[in-house]
Length: 269
Image (cartoon, rainbow, N blue to C red; front, side, top):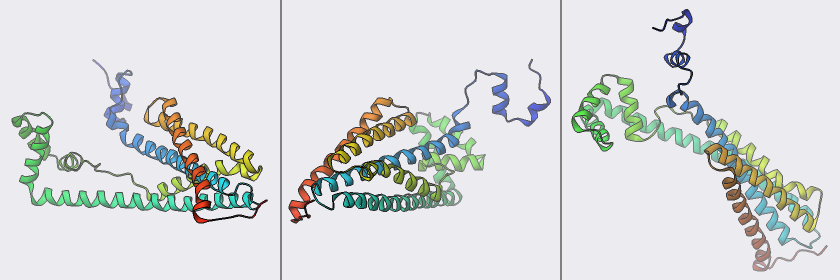
C-alpha cells in the first residue's frame, strides 16, 4: 500500500496522482485554459504578421507598378508603404480592441441571462439539461438522475448550463488591451518587410527584392501557423505563400489598370 509523505498534503490531487504514476497523462482540464490563452496570443501574432505582409505587399506592388518610370516613383512608394503600415497598425489595433470588448460583453450578457433563468425557471432549465444529455446518447432515466445530481452542486450546475447550453466558456480570458497591442505591433512588423527594399533600391530591382523577401516571410508565417494548429508545416507555408502571390498579383493588376481608368499621368523620370 502506498504511503503518504508530509509533502503530499500540500499538493493538489492531480500533482499527487502524477507523482504516483509518472506515466499518467495530465487531464485536459488541468492545462486547457492556460494552453488556450497561449494559443490565442500566438494566433494573433500570426494573423497580425500575415495581414501586415499581405496588405503592404499588395499596396507597394500596386504603387510601384502604377508609378513605374515616373520621377516620383521612389518617394511615392515609400510614402504609400509607410502610410499604409501606420494606418493598418492603428486600424488593426483598434479593431482587435473593439472586437475583444464586444466578445466579452456578449459573453457576460449571455451568462447573466442564463443565471437569471436558473433562478426563475428551475424546472425549464432542468428539462433543458435532460434534453441536452439525451441528445448526446444518454438514456432518459440516466439523464434525469444525472441532472438531479448536477443540480446538487450550484457552481457546477451553472457552469454546465453555460458551457453545454450556450456553447461558451463560463470563464473568459479576454484582454482587449493585450489583443490590441499584439495585433498592432505584429501588423507593423509584417508591414516593414515589403517596404525595406524600397529604401535601398529603385525600380524593378526593388520590386523583385520586395517580392522575394516577402515570399520568404509569408512562408515562415504560414509554417508558424501550422505549428500552432498542428498541421503539416509545408501545407501552411504553401497556403499563406499562395495567398501572398494573389495579393501581389492583385496589386500589380490594380497598378496597371487604375492609372488608365482615372486618366492619371505622372511626370517621367
